Image (cartoon, rainbow, N blue to C red; front, side):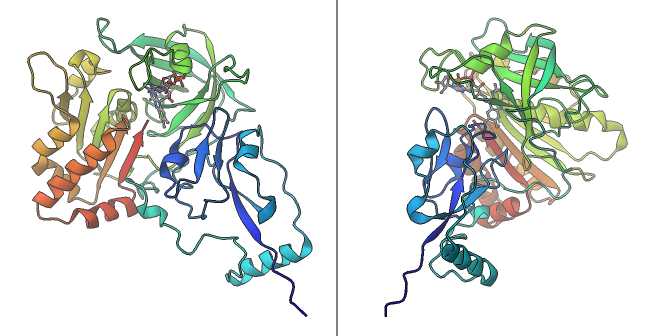
Length: 420
Ligand code: FAD
């Protein structure tokens, strides 16, 4: 008699459409291109995903971490997942398949039942340019306290432009107040804003993410508020005219308007809390928001003597397009080492943040050699490669092996990227 064929069970990787904020992090992270999206949802292709988990730690919401035991021939297709508004309910497996899957889980042996990470899975720690863990002394963050189904209503208590009125770059500082309701946040986290109205398909707009520009104790210390740094999007990434739904909504808000907020999000791009921790901050444009939050955290405790060193590399086209230029330049030079890279300042050579990292190689290497140093990079997507190249170059010049240092920085949660 022939033995019955084993029933193939798949531990299908799914993304919860109700929590996902469509930030694209998972699609960018997936080393095998198993994640894709349409105008509605981000989804995982069951024929490609190998369960390597590389996408799970970077997801700011945790919506990526959903798994269903399915008969392989009944796995949800990409097309089906595109149509979902919520995850389907779990289905019971046929008894024989459920027994096989349970045996695999208990023994750790995979008898053809694909219920765990694939043997050739890529280590999540090494598939990302930055760390997937926070620094050891980071405070524990709250995430997903408010969701699409149950958002928080915040009140606008301030909204003003922080770039020169004569420049094309219209960036606003927006302060949101939460009244008596809890919205605990940490520097480096972000929130989601639900813009009112519907998209071209008649569905409510999805949430857009914005980094906090204020420290954990509020834009005004001791108040239940926070600030954002929002750039009005008037053209797409290719330079064609476009009207950004959420950024224009936010930049046009008036005092006392209310806004639907979800989050907070983010559990890795967090600052260290131990005494004498140094920060190297590298940013462009609105990527300055988390750097402002961290710098302000340090400034508020300047008298404690606990602060380490702050080194900032800040890129923009011109001084007048640098958000917060005035207040930044008033900070004492012995408090923060400011390096401005201007790419279109009349009469000056073009300089980018990576050029300044090279120019300040000695100081950067000195800080990199200190295990109390954490590095944060935030801003345009394109800056990742340039910054990594510059860090590699200055480290190698100082006689160190970048590949070893890079792995240490990632393992210890000391190198973080947030680009969009
Ligand atoms: P959409 O209506 O979504 O897009 C309109 C068009 O503009 C589309 O063609 C789109 O491709 C293009 N586009 C989208 N975003 C940009 C952009 N940034 N620049 C140029 N073209 C664009 N933005 C901030 O202003 N401040 C922040 O602190 C901030 N933090 C973020 C943190 C994270 C983790 C992420 C993932 C994103 C962050 N963003 C931030 C970007 C923000 O979430 C929105 O993507 C941005 O405001 C555009 O949204 P929109 O609704 O106005 O444009």
